[in-house]
Image (cartoon, rainbow, N blue to C red; front, side, top):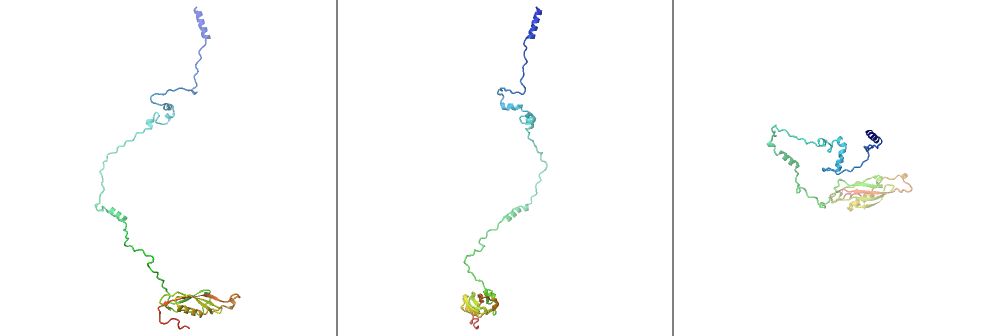
Length: 247
């Protein structure tokens, strides 16, 4: 009986179904776990940061050495007690106030002396004074085309007696080819009829250089027209008139 029991147990062990070994999931496989809310006042987002390996590579406040590396204790400085005596500067009493006086003298401004300035000039208060002539004698000046011909017997008019300054006597003259004046007319009066008459008489008696015959053309008659300007120099009146004896 004992042998038969041992044989039966051996057959059951050999022919019986054995349990298969349990297969473990891969180490980096995808897995989903339900994580309960942690306790102790730490949020889930803060708890996930504990597994960050960079916290151990660099110092950070959240690292294991954050308080040792990042929190710097302020330096405490205690100065040594002063042992040298105070050295006060000497004071010159005689120079007190000199700096303020120089500053006031440099910044002082001269007062506005309004009453010392002259009054402005009134417009029209002064009458215009005519310029005083510096000529010492009367002269005759040629103008126009007549100035191109030489005056053979130029006249020097005398100083004309008159109580006031005389203007210029302007005489227009026409001279023929032979040099004689054939016409004369007073264009501008000097203010003295006697002076104008004297200027007209001297113009009619004037003689100019003749024009050469070869210089004349068929269309040129040899007539020359110009101006004789008598610029008078006046003197105080006398009993006689200058030039009265002139024919």
